[in-house]
Length: 67
Image: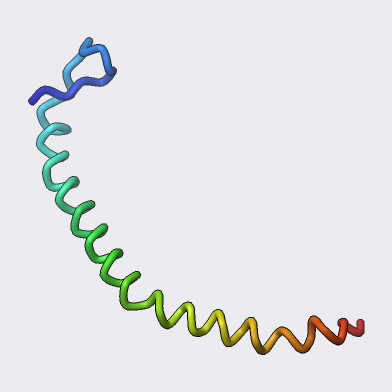
């Protein structure tokens, strides 16, 4: 597989850049996987916390704020 600086295939990237792409892509996939796992674990807790904050803030909204 050849990689080029522009989409029209004018100039191939240096070997070092091409070789670096493989571990970089693997690292990105790992980070995406870890992020998805964390989101799956934390999203329910975040939603419960958001609901609690919304419920606690509701009385202030009804009474109007005194400044």
